[in-house]
Image (cartoon, rainbow, N blue to C red; front, top):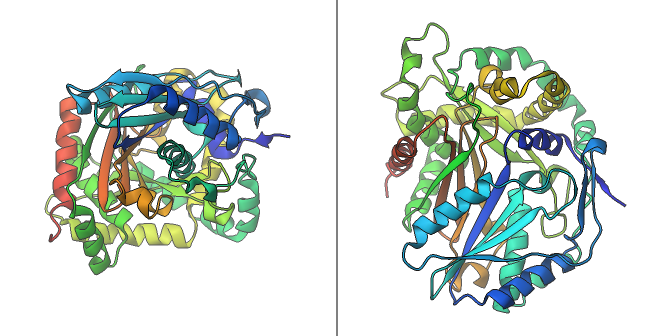
Length: 432
């Protein structure tokens, strides 16, 4: 018994041959750290969920979970003197730490930052193995076991770890795919109008990381504004990202052709193919891009409404499926490219300045799991060759945490801190 890698997973494996392509989720637990008990709970939970004995057969495009002991060793770092700084350093290190390339491997790493009366529990994972929704469910089940809440029984034991590939989705949506193919000339034209991000020529893809925790009430105000404007929460944050990025691309204003900025958004297609993450452990991701000239005087509301016109059409016509097919085509070309050209391929032909991924943990952790004690949930993902910046926004309870990873060869930490400040100021401009 085993599973077959889907298009997105196969492409992620090609990306991670250039640089680690990892994801990291972190939850704060409001009690003193008991390393031995926590390590035991992690290992027991992974074994019961069927997530042990992982074997990757990369050349065959297949994988399997053989079971047995998990073998997780929890790494603990003291963060009592400067917890936020230590946490940032730990996450940055996990983003850049490679996992084994093939064969039998453990695609998870766990770490804890000990803060005395509380601690942060982190889960770093080889991103091709699962999407953020599955990781949130697994991390939640570990926290439940450790805190003795007894609500983890809602999760299938074991999880279904061999989901169908995306081929079934393409067959079900054949008409939408064919319609989307007809729009390829428009997509190509948009890419040719878009300014290219920096970093395409660099040989170092290492990631930096910054983060912040939003104040209570801000998320609710942004959600209210989105509803009043007739857009989605994701539209507002995409617009805020475009406004924040604009000062980094001032040269485009005088450019003869490439005057627009583009951002990408991750799409979870699980609902079109699979049961929820509490039953199936899977990677079911696609993406799309939106571009805009972002004139200097444009407001967040106007830009969000412009973005919504694009995202609504993309979702209605399922154009993100065409992006998946484009990944498959890129995979065919990949062996013909040098590593240098692989690093800059998307920057040149599919320019995107930043990707944005929004995860609502409330959909997977409910009731006392969110409020007793209040949940703090932070996550991020590596930039990879698609874009030099990733905004990872996570909502839990009524709180928002923002993690920003970036290609260090393209941007300084100071530039990214200024970017984060502009991004935050933009969406906080809505009426409170």
